[in-house]
Image (tube, rainbow, N blue to C red; front, side, top):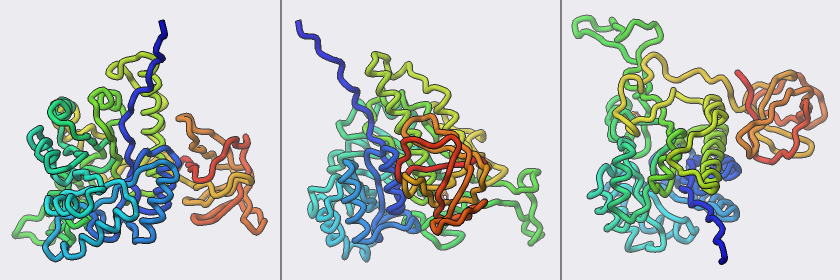
Length: 417
Ligand code: SF4
């Protein structure tokens, strides 16, 4: 009798945010299956850099050369004045061979369905899908993939999974809005910058105090803390430890937030989730059920080295509470920071992003979850002169102890702060 060999499990797609070409390269280097990005028009995250036509072409070509899909955000809530140029833009995206577009406005969705049926339609989190009927409705409208609202728990995700054939996408990591994703007027009210046109000024991260109406100018702290009180400041979402449950639930894609975050952040987060998913895939292949898997400690160590406002699982298991807010500061001090990007392998040349000294201990982020730990023993500028200190933006040749093996262009190095 011929025995069939075990099949490789189908893992969810790892979907990374890219606000620039450099972030795209980092996300792909560390194993994203797909990336999402915005053009200069019709995209939320207006300040993320975003891509003009030449930039879109370059990004899509690069991604496709590496077997990575590209979804373009067309997720503003459009006014009539926005619609005039939309057909040309959609046809441009189709010509550039974008794999899909991310939409939230029903008008944009219906127009895209008619004009560019070759573009996959993915429903943005801005559409706030929170129930099965809503999911089925959007699937009937032609949405192939639904990004579920961040306000759902695992049981709700499973219930929606059972009711629709549409691909389901879940945010697993990144900043959270205090309101239903982006449905918030704080930014409009304080600064005139419209969150639903991609221009949020993030006033939920400001420090607030109370003023009594007859005492203008007297600011009373909401809590007794001289650093202020960040009453709207939600911790960052992190579902790293829940990945086995999401795999088991049949989710199609896992999305990382952060088109405005740094190259170092995007690379490190993608690397962490890629490694975690691959580990889960190996365990399933070996016969372990996904639901019983617990990520080894090394994944938690890596997570602790990535910048954050603290971590919350948001609604995943239960309703969030005050423990899921960061009331006393804007963010948590980082213990490790990205310090450079490899620009050449041999000799090892990096472009620095932080001050780096001879004697500093650094970690090289390769393609295994354990980083390589080395000490910088010498640095040279490209003109050959030796230096003891490199400033951000320098291109320096590094000598390390021990020497690094298997160095790859685009890899990141980090150092302890
Ligand atoms: S102010 Fe904060 S909660 Fe409101 S839309 Fe912007 S990021 Fe979201």
